[in-house]
Image 1 (cartoon, rainbow over the protein chains, first blue to last red):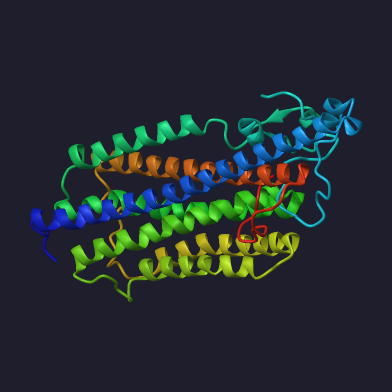
Image 2 (spheres, each protein chain N blue to C red):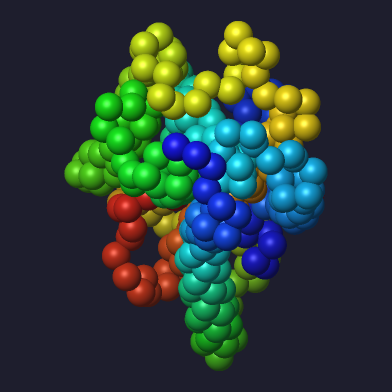
Length: 101
Length: 263
């Protein structure tokens, strides 16, 4: 086939590049929505944790004297690894959790 | 807290890996994104302002600079997914399964772009959206459809460990098929599809080759950036679930079985 004239070829070339860009934009949009959902969940979780702390403070008999230490030495969730077998990048409970990197 | 959540501990089984905290996904994402955008700016500038017009196809040939690099990166991504799957089966570390899954996922997305841009190019050059007697097109479609079955295959298995193992076997088998398929196509007799590398006439001229390599680098960087972005999102999501369990917080929805998570 002979080469298309520039005006006609331009439409095809623009179409190809626009499709490519649109695909990337759609993907990035989906990822942005996912990150927004994570952020919203995190906010909910933060308020849940704050409420929990409030209840603990309201009940002095249940106050944990070494709560800080426990939080650091027992970071593993109860039931971890039982029902959820999600992929983990932590190599084990004995691994260091220190250092912010 | 959020930033901390993204930090993951090293999984290195060696003593060296102990007490070493790394942030494998989120670190460097911003830099990589900036580099990718810059690479695309350079490659698009080269495509439209530097590379000469093709004597045979004219302006339509500019599609080559997006179509072919995308195809190469997608196919390499499938192979990389297979290599990660080998690492998963060898080590049993489910992190490799996540790498493999995300690599294949991203390559399938790139594959969609390859098929669409290829169809547009075919219509402009050959007058048809699709040509069934062209081995390059059909073989890519076969590879693409094969990887499209990866998702239902994976999600059909409920147990996560078994799911990861079977998916790895699939990724290795399919990953080995990709280069075999490529070689088979190269050996095919039809020369309808333009052969621009290693031809008797010397292949691409210098300016075109430079532009092509810049486009290939940009597409490779884009693939890497998006893989890293998705792994970061999965890591954040996994950390969130972990935190939710630690706090005994109510779970808003059922745990996702759609994709591997990274805790």
